[in-house]
Image 1 (tube, rainbow, N blue to C red):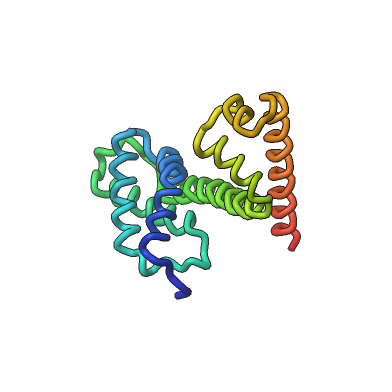
Image 2: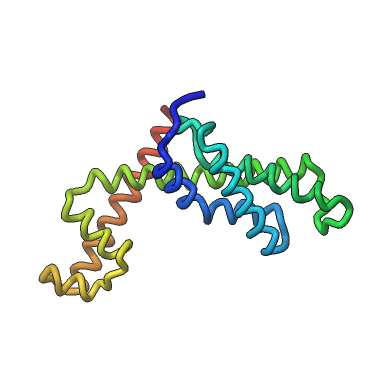
Length: 176
């Protein structure tokens, strides 16, 4: 087993993966209540097993595998009462496909984070103001002494630069 992460870092990883885990579970379960129940149980198992997580491996893969095991446990506990008649092999194939999508999104997110860190501090601050704090373009333009159109164009250019940076990094990862 490789290096582990601290509790705060682990909680941040779990929090960041709630939407992908929910999407993953929705590919395997029909009822929203089941998705919510299995997500809650998955979070508990993740927390109990946090010392086993190796930070050098993708968190999404590990978390989805635990979620998949929780789905299997739920379906087995219901026996014939279940509304889902998926074989374990089909369930595994669906889970693998979903995990791959989540891993790809995870890689894109990490590359985006790295690319944003390469920007000058003023541009990082502008991006945070607009996309994390949801400050309107008009308010930001006024604050920075620009027209809303000029600020919108600046944000557009930054988004394009970030997109190119992420795509370049992912291409290097594939060919590298």
